[in-house]
Image 1 (spheres, one colour):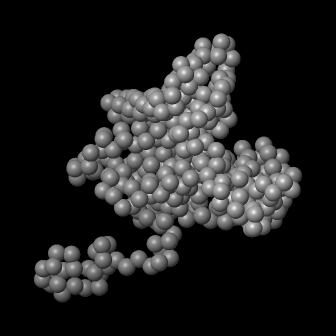
Image 2: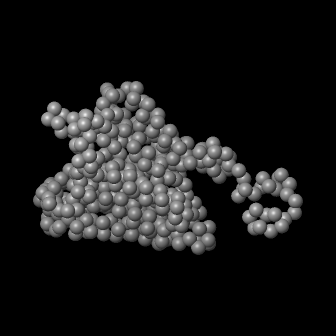
Image 3: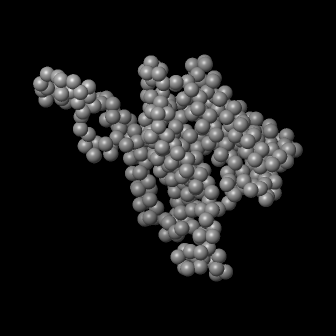
Length: 378
């Protein structure tokens, strides 16, 4: 009996049975090695052990963990969008500049035009959707590599941000007054401040977490960007692993021509991914502008490279069709841990740049080995 079709078939030899890959047994160890996020988890373990041995112990206190998780979350939101787009076979090098430009739109709406926060949010995300759509349309209609198209927008958006800030602020490259503009808005707590403050105060009263001499908890709550980071990771993972659309993303990045022949709406998928990536950048812009109370021309500077590196560390192949949102999650935590962790050691912080290059090289080598194992290449 044929296990796939349910029809009778001639007696099978051992060689014939082995030829059917759909029936081939895969050991748990082989399945583990093929997981995209394996490298990121291993890297996180190594980095954690390193800082446990050389850093001040306060780095891994509750306050220390919050200190490195906040920048990790901001980068991670970008990395989730970058990972989805890379799995779909495309790049977006305009991410960092998109953060700056969206920050200009957001702060300009609030401070210059004095519109309510809901309308400012709507304008900011609408701008991101429009730019993501433009990137996608140029890439798909011209056949140019998305690397080149979005590299152009990296400079275009950064230049527009500089010009716009000088106009809005009367010649400066910074625009202040954001916190005052959103004061009292019911939507503000969704994008700024800390959550679960009551719980943390309650734990401090019982001595479960550290507190100051005046009785206030050393950690007042969980920064809101961390919750956004976790939520987006969960949603992206569910989409990739549990939905038809997730299968389409992998198919579009793995073999676009074959996917089209199979009925996958490749163009529609890639347009949605470009828009999603731009929206992630807009979300980071809103979070960081509200946190700082201002925006400036260098906001998001070089974050496009960090986001892509975090996605690569998380298992995304540069060729598309393979990757993981969970891997990007762990890759971003590695970045946050190293960025903040160096301040807990005597190591020169400029070694962070050395780390960026080293981790990218190691991740690409590791992912190349995994790709060969998955595809059977030699």
